[in-house]
Image (cartoon, rainbow, N blue to C red; front, side):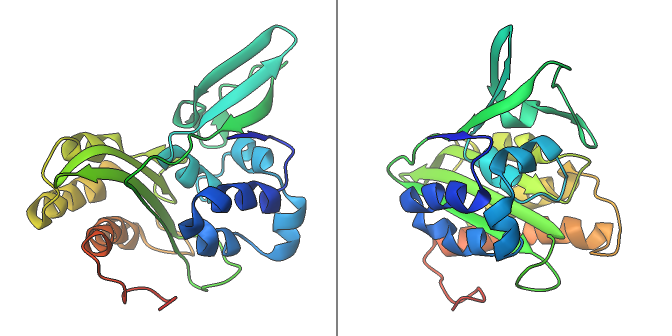
Length: 222
């Protein structure tokens, strides 16, 4: 799916939810209705806030960002777009043109977790999105996007590498949870302490495993 940078967040998430209905709650918790109706996906991506909720989702889905200028265009994985706190690779004559998101594949297991002080209309303390394909009890593909735990929206590449090709077992997930807690160096601020953020990262990965095993009654919706 190619979503133009000026598409509103409401319309962008509507397109994503159409193919991935499990994102509906996550989309509804993004800011408030006026913000979703006026803000754009391209603005959220280009702003590059480490606590912006779109980027962890897009990173986990393997999204690419396309940069445009009179010289032509550049296409890159979204996690390569950011170079530091609110810094990116945009040249002075470039703009964000659109974002490309791969379509769902059969067997895809996707969960987007937003942890905040208020359930509705609040900024994330931690955002974690996991997109995995598990076949025959083995992790065949995985993408993990994280927000609120680094200077930029980030991809948990070390933890992905640890899980890829491994049996999808409780022990493997416990080891990966330790890896995920250690992969980033979050800061303490008004929303959460660094220790809390690190702990929650690992806990959310374990929650993802429990949900993959069929457990349903471990979220606020139910």
